[in-house]
Image (cartoon, one colour):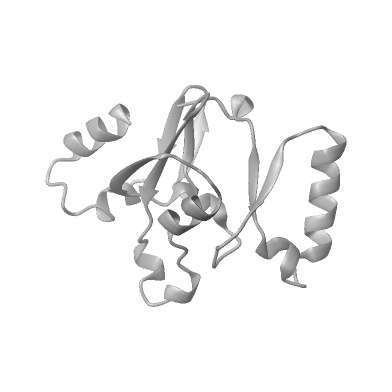
Length: 140
C-alpha cells in the first residue's frame, strides 16, 4: 500500500460542485488545495459524494486497485450506489479490477500497510477462509 503522503491526486465527486448544499464547502476546499499546489480532480458519473467508498485505492506510484462496491448498507438504496466500472471508464482511470467487495471508506492507510474493518469478512461470504481473503488482499 502506498503511504497517504505519496498519493498524487485527490478526487472529488462533481456533486460537490453541482449540488447547492455543498458548493460553498467545495469552493473553499478547492481554494485550499490550489493554494498548497495539491493536485485534484472532479469526477463525473457519481451518485454519491462519498467517492472514497467506491473509487480505486492507490497502492503504488502508478497502480490503483478497484474493488467491487456492493455494500450491504446500500442494498436498498441503489440511487446512492455508484458503479465503479462506469466511474473509472468515464474518468479515464485504468485500475486493476478485483472481485473482492470492499468499501474504500473502510480502508485506512498506515505507512505502507492498510488497516481494514472486519466488515471485509461479512461483505465477502464467498470466501470460506479468512486467510485466503487476507492473502488475496495482500497480493493486490
